[in-house]
Length: 462
Ligand code: GLY
Ligand code: MN
Ligand code: MN
Image 1 (cartoon, rainbow, N blue to C red):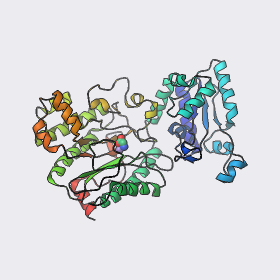
Image 2: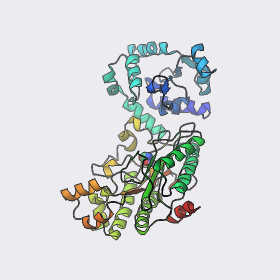
Image 3: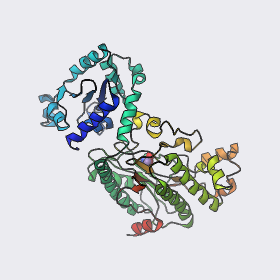
Image 4: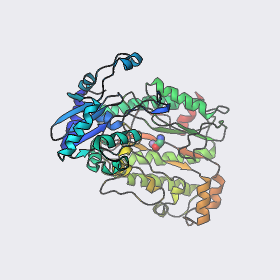
């Protein structure tokens, strides 16, 4: 946990930014897996973590803007719990750790909300992403379950985004701890990427390395020799020479700050000529994006700078034709990268996307595109110092998509379908790092994880 003053200052800023009303920030409950007492690993809600810092389940934080007080509502454990859990701090002791003086039990929360509603005070809450929290809000506020989301507070969403999108030095240090563990996950898995092994062995190794760093993975591991399926969570393929292996994996620190790293390596440790050709194109785009990332540029512009590098490379390979500017304007390169360059990262691997991705990734000046590919860019807004954002271009030969574009004649002036056909069984490549926007430019966070062809081959040979 950070110092209690950090949480108090965050709540004070939110109180000021919101001005009036009562803000309710529920922590998460345990989530049953197959029966009530066999739960999934507990993950605290990130907004609760940001403002109240506590890892215990079944707590609700309240920030009263008009009264100037903060509260935590939760029930103390009784002896029936303690038999199973061992002694635990009381709610008031926990609250004191994060600078909150006022506590109450859960039965008092509904009454607190009733008083606020009766006095005409606006009660602000974020759109819930779990059904149990939606049901709680319905109960506390006397709303129909199905109506809860429509009462979520856009001003609260925007105030939380404004604050959380700028990472402090202590948050950056936490993210770099998560990347240090991701280094061990990725370098170890690279060395295991030899023919005859199975994807699940490498995924299992990575998961173990994450827990060795004292946290879980930050999202289900992608470990696949079919990287053309973007979020491929199956791990059953046998590794064969000739396949590229896409490894997209990160972890969380005990405070739940995340890493999100992708490396793509040739099974067996040696790039063949085709693999090297595509790899160098994607790497060129990834480095170009980091090079141009700086305050004041939009991430949409950075995406397009990376797109130009991809288009240049595909032109040289003979897959695309025409001028690079025309290719990018038409979106023809998106046939090979139907996703955006990146997203914010922090306490969530896709940071704050529970607030509604558009509210996080875009601002009043920069709106999402409707074009295929660019329209999937999760974050396009103008960059500011303190943003942490992923830089993750890729190249994917997706047979079903290629066939669709060819049948429909999409971008037929720019795509050489005969040449492209020679690559349709290639699979995919993605390269991803986590990047900090600094006052003058950007910095790829963490200890560098092998990324060039030479670095990867040397690592896999060691
Ligand atoms: N790990 C999912 C992503 O890179 O966005
Ligand atoms: Mn990723
Ligand atoms: Mn990512």
